[in-house]
Image 1 (tube, rainbow, N blue to C red):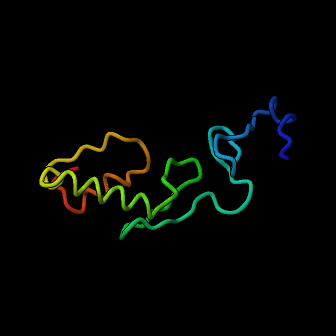
Image 2: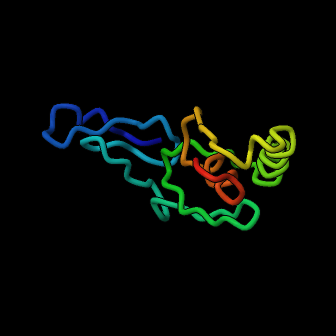
Length: 102
């Protein structure tokens, strides 16, 4: 259990972040233990991911879903692709290997 009550009035006020592995001090996520990032591989792409980032942690399933999206898009995937989802850009980078413009 992390006791943060005494820090609320301090200029460096801390609170539990949305991510359970860190606390937020002045809008910066500080890890409770270990690194403030991790690495993961999605197909041939390698990502350095910060703790509060939105990322699909099931890389195997994400790769299958992205490849299915490319297949279903057909020739359209070779033209201009718009990634309308938020996150760290995995969909954009997956399509960028084939698309003319992302």
